[in-house]
Image (cartoon, rainbow over all chains, first blue to last red; front, side, top):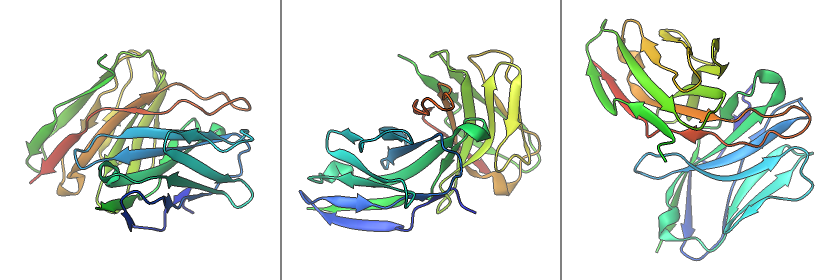
Length: 115
Length: 118
């Protein structure tokens, strides 16, 4: 079974609008972390936001927030006030304690911001 | 701040040739890993290490070897290149998580190495 599932291969959003990128995960480990990365067309991987399984509140970093629904095993990324520079691939990832700290990545969502 | 340094950035090989992708980090991270990125498949873990002298296989280890003689370096060796190994390779490092406490500590990535096998 896939550890991380991103069901949206491509998304479009109007500039200045908010967008939600979906991510579901599969784990039985009570100790895990969820991460989002951005990969622009230049290819580098940029860390955006982290949510721990023990965190009580949803993580926020500037225009990025993580909608963490533990019971549903979802960790959706919300980007508010989209900018043209947000156009990129976005990857959700998970790390579990019981698999040697391995990071598992989803297949990514390509976001295009329309002016 | 160098962070994670990968070399070379581009390489073209012929089938059957061998080569080593170099990876070095200067952040004293215990955890290091190699991923390959192929279109539509995200990042797949090849090998990883949780400290000097310790390595383990990831999801797609066949055709690759690694070693970790120092904390800083984690080279990836292609033993006999095949066209199926044409990909973009990323090295990444990070701090270890603490089970029951926190799994925080993002991965820091190198810039990637684009490998083409003819």
